Amino acid sequence: MFRGFRVGSVAGIPIKLDVTFLLILPVLAYLIGSGMADAVTALNAVLGAGLDAEALTAGATPWAIGFASATGLFVCVLLHELGHAAVARRYGYETESITLWLLGGIARPEERPERWNHELWIALGGPVVSVALGVGCFVAINAVPSEPWRFVVSYLAVLNIVLAGFNMLPAFPLDGGRVLRALLGRTRSHAAATELAVSVGKSFAVVLAIIGIVAFNPFLVAVAFFVYIAAAAEGRRTALAATFEGVRVADVMTPASELSAVEPTESLAEVLDRMFGERHTGYPVLESGRLVGVVTLSDIRDVAPDSRATTTIEEAMSTDLETVGPDTEAMEAMTRLERGDVGRLPVVDRTGALVGLVTRSDLVTAMTVIRERRADR
Image (tube, rainbow, N blue to C red; front, side, top):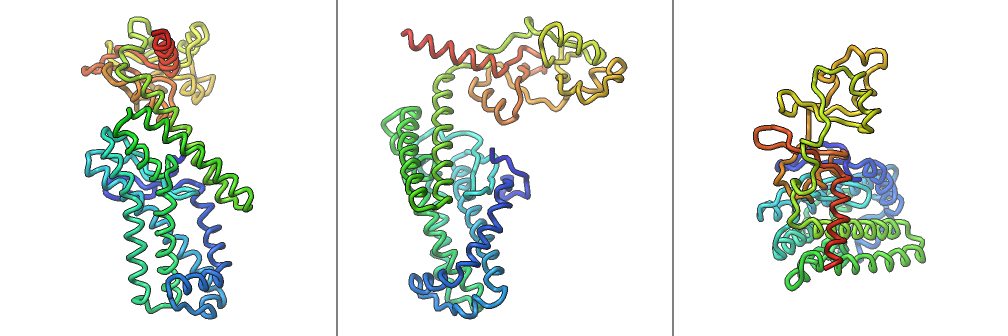
């Protein structure tokens, strides 16, 4: 979810667009354009923008303004997420990517903050940027001579303040929910603080969904659904991290001595026969004891059946491998498996020699055993 496709980068942070962004942008532009008259009345009343409704609703003007306003809103959302990323970088945490999607933006951190005050300021970074943008747009209203652009600036002045206010609601995983978790983390463990923040977030989502259904507002229902799902996912992830605390890959991997490996000179037909006999769907490929690749059933399927007897593993194997070391934390291995959408990770030492293999099954089994052992104490 939220992988998207890359469109550029800012300060070394990849910027991605989810397909839902391409769907919502024209819809939002249409909604702004079709509601132009009411929006002008509201902006004049709230900000004293002095907008001319007749000029802004003539011909194709509302639709052009709608598209400019929708695009400007998502630019502000991107700056909001960059605010989080900037503060995170200040504390030594990098951001893996920022993705714009249906309901706004998602900044994906490479690692969670280790201290509660770091998470607090990182969470506040986005809303602070939104407030600054809102104030800046308000100040600039009268300096914009063009009537259509004055509408866009006025619209963004209000929407940025609304964005900051909504994000500060204490509902995890909104920014306000992260602030709540950070404050709870002053006197509780990270797991306990997350559990309480997640409970608040889920309760908020249920209330928001009820309001959305009563008001026939699909946007509120969508936001409620996202908040609930994201809160539940964070709760599961935190519980998993607590389970794996202090556990290394070396503790849960299958050691190399127990693995079946193949050599790059073997044919695909031979390895396919081994897969059938040993009930495996992938093998590490070793050359002089060093890992040089991995061959899977998927790799074999890419080769025509009548060519498999004459095609070597070396010609079909995957060489762009995601690997971990034996001292890597088990939770990090789980994260890499999920992020790369793979079923196994080779474990190599500093010389590149294969020392084991860790799979989703290994980690799930280890998690179950650890929980049972703790329950017995």
